[in-house]
Image 1: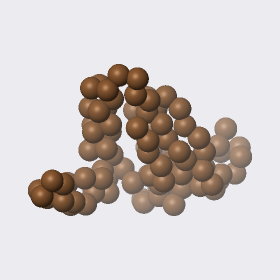
Image 2 (image 1 turned 30 degrees about the vertical axis):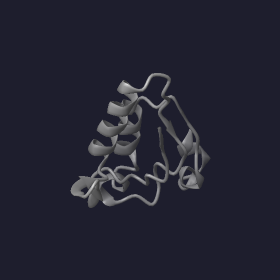
Image 3 (image 1 turned 90 degrees about the vertical axis):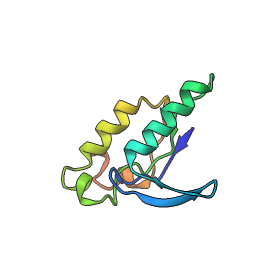
Length: 96
């Protein structure tokens, strides 16, 4: 299960139509719960992120130099991930 271009969107949500029913989707609590639920019912599943998890973020994350997003990503327990261009926004020293 993969996630990319998250850009610190911790509390952004929207309504989408799923199977003819309007549901709320998008904020990290919904995303994390859905990914963990699917992982629990599907053996041999990996949680992966493909970069741009931070940078270009809304205030909830950007005001704190994206630390809230980093903490959420760590708590989710991704098996593997990579960096995108926005992980370099604050320079290589910040990325370390």
